[in-house]
Length: 280
Image (cartoon, rainbow, N blue to C red):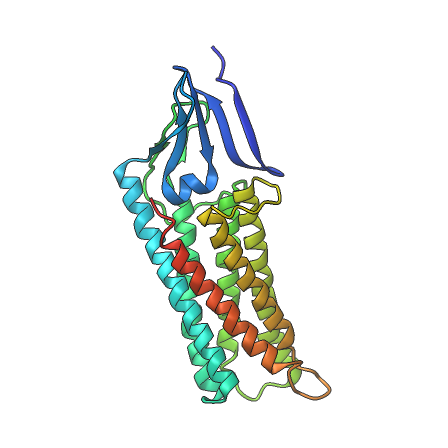
């Protein structure tokens, strides 16, 4: 006998939802975000009018809960530190080294959140296309290379963005830089990091909306992606406003840079709080 009939949906080359007929009758529906975040797959037995969700095994669920809580907490703290650094910079209540130190500490938490998010994708329970309607938990891994998966690509780009931000934050401790050096060593990595965050958010929307434009007011996952994408957009505005003019040696608009950093960072903290509730 051949493989049971399958129907794939997604964005471009990425599959984000897969529906197939079970050998014993009925259908199973795997959705990328639901499976990797909550360890669930939808199964509708033959003759039934509604589907029920089947969970991964307890090992996989415990793993997802720990990773989700760790990543969410890291983004909450990282966002709060970035907001604090921007607030201090705007109020002028601390010198440049103090602000750089707070931003750097926040960046370390963003690094942690980005890498743990990647671990969550790498170690999430997997479906068996065309097989039984269940998720399988595999051995623990610290890394994988799966660019054909939109969830992996989204969080990998996010993690890469946090690493680029780390370069920017380290360079901000350097003293006596010329305007050209400041723009090359601090501003350019900032722009690249913001662009990577925006790309990651776009891929996350593609995953949750299956390649279409969508607004899902009742979906916690959609709100998490939307809030984080707003934070990424505000970070990009901040980075653009922080360009140092060669002619004057001053920023394009320091107030805009500080306030958009503060609000954008608060979005990431809020996204982390919401993420605490998107768990198995």
